[in-house]
Length: 219
Ligand code: AMP
Image (cartoon, rainbow, N blue to C red; front, side, top):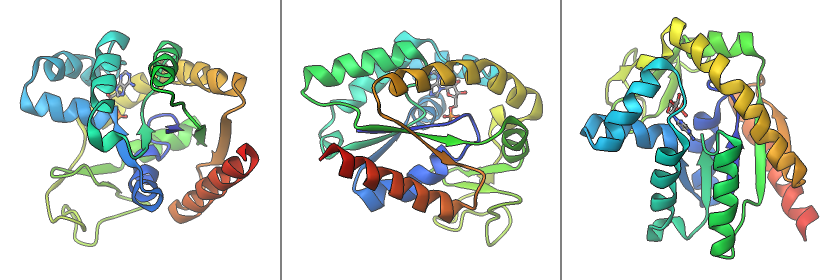
């Protein structure tokens, strides 16, 4: 299992979309799971939506239950790229314990590092497709046809929590926890960091290089 860490807007989702097929891993994003559940109107989805709309983290017990259940599905056996989980030290601890029970573990955690002022700029230009959650940016990654997903032709929309007021709340609330999660993996010698301000394809190559280096040093 690999973990992609980063503040909202750092590019976790964008990079995970590229890396997961390349590394033959299942891409699991707890934010996508919550948005899908909210759209379907399930109890977890409705509970999560209230927190998401305020830019707050969904409580650990709800998040952990949802993620651990998803990890039991057969398609998660091939290896997983986690995007947006763990986001608190408690989540990181529960994940370690759950994986240890299955003789598995987080191999590497990679932080996509981007300064806060750049995060606000990116999040306020972000667009997401209705069908599959493919990610665009009005400035750095515009779609070929405005308002339409290049990949599946569905409509692009601005996430409710990408409004400027909510963006600031998300960063204020989530960055301190992110730093603690980084400490968790640093203490295990598993944390690597890449410069997330570079162009998308360069960040991808840096991530691949960091992973190759990691698997080399693990041997
Ligand atoms: P994301 O799409 O990763 O930016 O996540 C959107 C929102 O979903 C976050 O702002 C949180 O409200 C919620 N969320 C996603 N992942 C987690 C998590 N691991 N723990 C708590 N809340 C989460």
